[in-house]
Amino acid sequence: MKTDLRVLRTQKAIREAFLQLLNQKDYKEISVREILERAMVNRMTFYKYYSGIDDLVAKLIAEFKAFYAQSVYERFTSPNVAEFLQNSLPAFQEKIPLMLALQNIQTKRHHLYQDQLDIVKTVFLEKFAATAYDEFKDYQATMFAMAVVGTERYYAERGEPLPAEKLPEQWRHIAAALGGK
Image 1 (cartoon, rainbow, N blue to C red):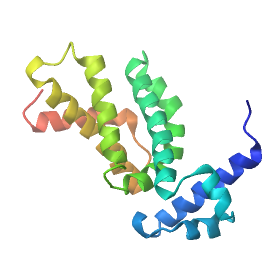
Image 2: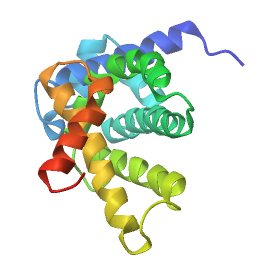
Image 3: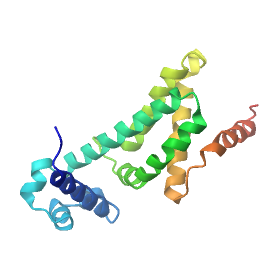
Image 4: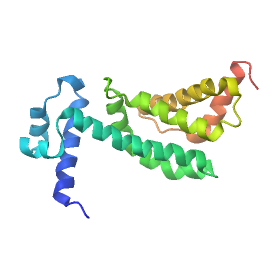
């Protein structure tokens, strides 16, 4: 069943209005009324799709997490990492403003940055558990997740493209500085 284009446009307007407000003020300071005014929709329309701002945020985060988890999984199962990155980075770059905005919402229910760490860690453990030292698997997965998600955030916050082809070399320099090979 196809979704009516008017519905998609309305939902997009609501989401964009919310994200614009989120870039201007703290999550807890945003009201439904402000979203309605920016999106130019009425209250009934908003509540037709969302039970409140918290529900809107939950749906935005769920959609981003689905995209992110799929990307991370594909990255680790791709036989050609360089080709995967070349093909997938444009879609990721497009979602950076959304990611940064949602990472700034930290509540008991909403914690995208931590969710991203958990996604990378889980996939790392699934894919590399056999090659990790047993007693250090969790540590290695946690450090790897922090490096990946931290790197994404580092470049995103600076508005710079992720230099994927240069990252392995940079991580080797870090390992060498720590006394590794």
